[in-house]
Length: 450
Ligand code: TYD
Ligand code: MG
Image (cartoon, rainbow, N blue to C red):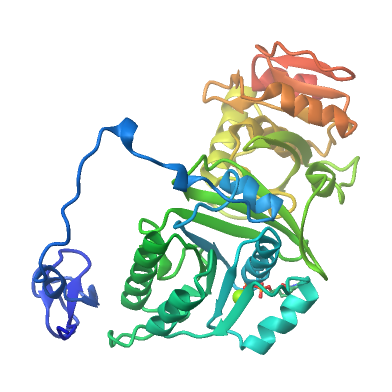
C-alpha cells in the first residue's frame, strides 16, 4: 500500500509546502497553511471507472426518498426526513441540546425500524446510556460507542451497517494519518470527507454535530458547509427552554421551515401552540411593546417586539438590536424621524424580539417602528392590536406575503384589530382591518396624535 503523505497548503493561494511555516511562500500571507492529505498520492493511482453521462429522464432517483426520523419537528425542517446517504451538519452552541436532540432522534427512528449508531467523542458510553434512559431513547437497535479515531469509526460502520449514524462531535474526530490536533481545520475537513464518501457509498445517513462559537460561527466546521448536504442550526433562549431548528442549507428541499421544541426534564418535546408560548409572559398596558404575526416557513407565529427609548448621553447614541437586524433598526429610526416627524435619532434605542427568536420577516418593520414610538411617548399600543407591514424608505407600508394566515392566527390568539398595508384584500372573521398606506397613517391609526 502506498504510504500516505501529508502536505501543508495555503488556504488563500493554494501553494503547497512539505513543512508547516508561519508565512506562505506563495503569497506571503501569515498563518494560512493547513495540513491536508497529499493529492498527488491519490491521483497517481489509475483512474477509477469513468463516469457515464445519461439522459436526465433515465437517471433513477428513488433512493433519494426521505425517511421519517420519528421526530415531527425534525421531519418538518427536513421536508419529510433524512435521505439515505445524506450528510447533515447540526450546529449549535455548547449546552443548547444537540446531543439530546440526536439521541432522541435515534431512539425515535429505531421505533420506525431504522438502526442507529451513536458515536460519542465527548461522553462515555455509560453517560450516554444514562441520558438515554431519562429520554426514553433506549432501544435494542440503537448502538453506542465512545470513539474518536476515524478508522475505528469507519470499521464500526462497516460492521454494524446502521441506517443512521450520529457523530458527536465532529470536532473530536481524529485521523492518525494527520499530525494536526483534533478540532483543527485539517482534521475536521479530512475526517468529514471520509465519512461523506462512506455515507454516499453505503447509503447511511450521517449526522455530524458541530459546536458553534459565541460569535455564532461554526468553528472549524465552517469549512464543512459545502461538503455536507444539509446544515441545521439549533438555537434558542436557554433560560426559556425554547429551541428553534432551522436549515440554512438543504439539498433535498426548501430551507424555510422552522422546528420548535421545548426542553424540559424529559428532553425535547414539540411545541403545540407556538404563539401561545411566545406571548405567555406578555404584560399588557405597558409602553414599548407591539405584536406582529410573522410567518416562518409555513407556520404563523405571533411575536412580541419590545423597544426602549432613553435619553442619550453620547455623541453617537446607542443602538442595540436583539433578534432584529441592526441595519433594519437604524433604517426604521431614520424613517420615523424623516417621514413621520418623530424626533428619535438623538436617543439611545434598544429593540428586541421576545423569547430569544430571530425575526427576519420584513413584515415586522411597522411593529418595530410602533414599539419605538410607543416607548418614546410612554403611550401603550391597544392590547388587542397586531401590526403588519414592511416599511419602505419613502415611509410607505408595503404588502407582505401570507397575510390571511397571519391574520387568522392573530384572531385565534384573541386579537381584534390589525394594522395592515393598504392593498390588503382579505377578510378575517372577528378581526377589524385598519388599512394604512404609510407608516405615518399607521401611527395615527394606532392612536398617536401629532
Ligand atoms: P446537551 O444535549 O448536552 O447539549 P449539547 O450537546 O448541545 O452541548 O444539552 C445539555 C443541556 O440540556 C443541559 O444544560 C441540561 C439540559 N437538559 C434538560 O434540560 N433536560 C433533559 O432531559 C436533558 C437530557 C438535558
Ligand atoms: Mg453534546
